[in-house]
Image (tube, helix red, strand yellow):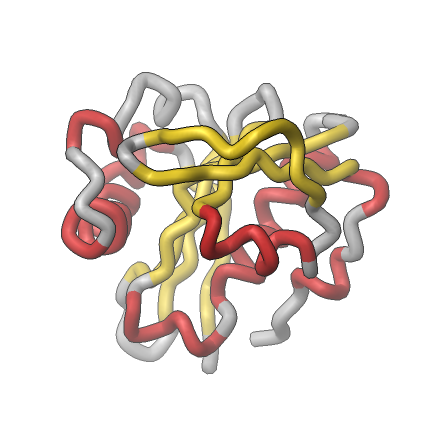
Length: 153
């Protein structure tokens, strides 16, 4: 598997990022479009992963200056390849560059254990967001094990 991974700006890459997020969050997860695309997209730092063979965008994610990681989406055809690790690694690198001490993600309950294995810990009570139960998970940026988030390509 050969992939290209890059940080992109919303204004330049919005059609590619939207395409991935629409397929994953709107079509698969049934998140309403008005909730999926919000005012935070313009100020967020975005990662884009493309398959070098097909030249197709396959994954994305974003991090806000506040440290909130969100919108990690991987096309179904590439989920067994752990592409989410690549996205998370890129977002954590941005957090380090921003000199953030902590990052957090509002994880669907089904993914809490997934984030625990990447040095995230639960914060607060379970809450509802976009009609789904979620758990806020946080991670100290200087404590994260980047090796757990690394996948060579």
